[in-house]
Image (cartoon, rainbow, N blue to C red):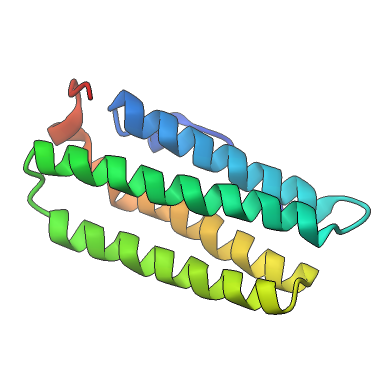
Length: 136
Protein backbone atom coordinates (compact mmCIF):
# COMPACT_ATOMS: atom_id res chain seq x y z
CA UNK A 1 0.00 0.00 0.00
CA UNK A 2 1.11 3.52 -0.55
CA UNK A 3 0.05 6.92 0.68
CA UNK A 4 -2.63 8.78 -1.22
CA UNK A 5 -1.50 12.19 -2.38
CA UNK A 6 -3.87 15.12 -2.84
CA UNK A 7 -3.80 16.22 -6.44
CA UNK A 8 -5.60 18.83 -8.51
CA UNK A 9 -7.94 16.31 -10.16
CA UNK A 10 -9.43 15.57 -6.72
CA UNK A 11 -10.52 19.18 -6.22
CA UNK A 12 -14.24 19.86 -6.40
CA UNK A 13 -13.68 23.59 -6.19
CA UNK A 14 -15.68 24.14 -3.02
CA UNK A 15 -13.38 24.83 -0.06
CA UNK A 16 -15.17 22.88 2.69
CA UNK A 17 -15.64 19.80 0.48
CA UNK A 18 -12.01 19.89 -0.64
CA UNK A 19 -10.80 20.33 2.94
CA UNK A 20 -12.95 17.40 4.06
CA UNK A 21 -11.52 15.23 1.30
CA UNK A 22 -7.99 16.19 2.37
CA UNK A 23 -8.78 15.18 5.96
CA UNK A 24 -10.24 11.85 4.83
CA UNK A 25 -7.08 11.19 2.83
CA UNK A 26 -4.99 12.02 5.92
CA UNK A 27 -6.93 9.44 7.95
CA UNK A 28 -6.44 6.86 5.22
CA UNK A 29 -2.73 7.65 5.15
CA UNK A 30 -2.61 7.26 8.95
CA UNK A 31 -4.25 3.87 8.52
CA UNK A 32 -1.71 2.97 5.85
CA UNK A 33 1.13 3.86 8.24
CA UNK A 34 -0.44 1.73 10.98
CA UNK A 35 -0.80 -1.20 8.61
CA UNK A 36 2.81 -0.92 7.47
CA UNK A 37 4.30 -0.55 10.95
CA UNK A 38 6.77 -3.20 12.05
CA UNK A 39 4.37 -4.24 14.78
CA UNK A 40 0.66 -4.44 13.98
CA UNK A 41 -1.33 -2.82 16.79
CA UNK A 42 -5.07 -3.50 16.43
CA UNK A 43 -5.91 -0.83 19.03
CA UNK A 44 -4.08 1.81 16.98
CA UNK A 45 -5.94 0.72 13.84
CA UNK A 46 -9.27 0.75 15.69
CA UNK A 47 -8.64 4.30 16.91
CA UNK A 48 -7.90 5.52 13.37
CA UNK A 49 -10.93 3.67 12.02
CA UNK A 50 -13.21 5.33 14.54
CA UNK A 51 -11.93 8.77 13.53
CA UNK A 52 -12.24 7.88 9.84
CA UNK A 53 -15.81 6.63 10.21
CA UNK A 54 -16.91 9.62 12.28
CA UNK A 55 -15.33 12.10 9.90
CA UNK A 56 -16.78 10.30 6.86
CA UNK A 57 -20.28 10.65 8.23
CA UNK A 58 -19.71 14.31 9.12
CA UNK A 59 -18.35 14.94 5.63
CA UNK A 60 -21.25 13.22 3.91
CA UNK A 61 -23.67 15.32 5.94
CA UNK A 62 -21.87 18.57 5.00
CA UNK A 63 -21.59 17.58 1.35
CA UNK A 64 -25.26 16.61 1.15
CA UNK A 65 -26.32 19.95 2.68
CA UNK A 66 -24.29 21.77 0.05
CA UNK A 67 -25.83 19.63 -2.70
CA UNK A 68 -29.30 20.53 -1.43
CA UNK A 69 -28.36 24.20 -1.24
CA UNK A 70 -27.33 24.25 -4.90
CA UNK A 71 -30.17 21.90 -5.95
CA UNK A 72 -27.78 19.31 -7.35
CA UNK A 73 -29.82 17.25 -9.86
CA UNK A 74 -28.14 13.92 -9.03
CA UNK A 75 -28.63 14.35 -5.28
CA UNK A 76 -30.63 11.16 -4.66
CA UNK A 77 -28.17 8.90 -6.47
CA UNK A 78 -25.22 10.57 -4.77
CA UNK A 79 -26.75 10.11 -1.32
CA UNK A 80 -27.48 6.46 -2.15
CA UNK A 81 -23.77 6.00 -2.92
CA UNK A 82 -22.87 7.56 0.43
CA UNK A 83 -25.24 5.21 2.26
CA UNK A 84 -23.81 2.19 0.46
CA UNK A 85 -20.25 3.22 1.34
CA UNK A 86 -21.19 3.67 5.01
CA UNK A 87 -22.89 0.26 4.97
CA UNK A 88 -19.84 -1.45 3.44
CA UNK A 89 -17.37 0.27 5.75
CA UNK A 90 -19.58 -0.63 8.70
CA UNK A 91 -19.68 -4.26 7.58
CA UNK A 92 -15.91 -4.41 7.13
CA UNK A 93 -15.40 -2.69 10.49
CA UNK A 94 -17.64 -5.30 12.08
CA UNK A 95 -15.39 -8.05 10.71
CA UNK A 96 -12.39 -6.21 12.15
CA UNK A 97 -14.11 -5.84 15.54
CA UNK A 98 -14.74 -9.57 15.70
CA UNK A 99 -11.32 -10.47 14.33
CA UNK A 100 -8.85 -7.57 14.64
CA UNK A 101 -6.40 -9.06 12.19
CA UNK A 102 -4.07 -7.28 9.81
CA UNK A 103 -5.95 -8.83 6.90
CA UNK A 104 -9.31 -7.41 8.04
CA UNK A 105 -7.76 -3.99 8.58
CA UNK A 106 -6.26 -4.12 5.07
CA UNK A 107 -9.69 -4.91 3.64
CA UNK A 108 -11.08 -1.75 5.20
CA UNK A 109 -8.18 0.32 3.91
CA UNK A 110 -8.38 -1.11 0.39
CA UNK A 111 -12.12 -0.67 0.07
CA UNK A 112 -12.18 2.81 1.58
CA UNK A 113 -9.16 4.15 -0.31
CA UNK A 114 -10.42 2.83 -3.65
CA UNK A 115 -13.98 3.97 -3.01
CA UNK A 116 -12.98 7.44 -1.84
CA UNK A 117 -10.61 8.25 -4.69
CA UNK A 118 -12.98 6.83 -7.32
CA UNK A 119 -15.99 8.57 -5.78
CA UNK A 120 -14.22 11.93 -5.65
CA UNK A 121 -12.96 11.66 -9.24
CA UNK A 122 -16.08 10.11 -10.81
CA UNK A 123 -18.89 11.61 -8.71
CA UNK A 124 -17.86 14.54 -6.56
CA UNK A 125 -16.15 16.40 -9.38
CA UNK A 126 -19.53 16.45 -11.14
CA UNK A 127 -20.56 18.86 -8.36
CA UNK A 128 -17.98 21.42 -9.49
CA UNK A 129 -20.18 23.57 -11.76
CA UNK A 130 -22.85 23.67 -9.06
CA UNK A 131 -20.70 24.35 -5.99
CA UNK A 132 -17.83 26.47 -7.25
CA UNK A 133 -17.92 29.72 -5.39
CA UNK A 134 -20.45 28.50 -2.80
CA UNK A 135 -19.23 29.33 0.71
CA UNK A 136 -20.88 27.59 3.63
